[in-house]
Image (cartoon, rainbow, N blue to C red; front, top):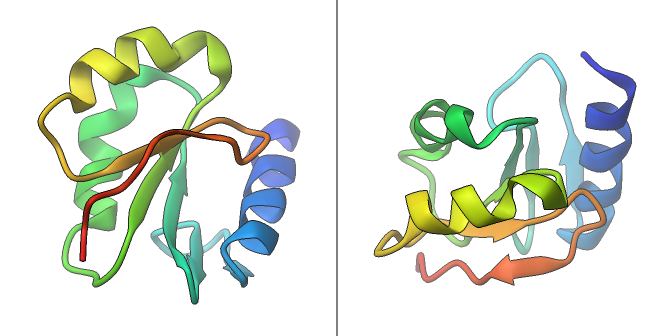
Length: 95
């Protein structure tokens, strides 16, 4: 994995009060939700598959430069969007 991916996943794990496990999907599982860290917006379908089946809020974390395309792809979806600094751009509406 890329160094920026690992740094972002660890930061998000702290925010979601959970744990980053690089060998399992999703990358982060916590008390406040789950997150899958990706580097490109075209990886959103794969991230959604990895987040499927779980309960509670779910987020896809992408670099800020990918958010415009990601917003378009996630429109009308319950999955939330956050950046690598764990700032939520689109809240998750999953229950």
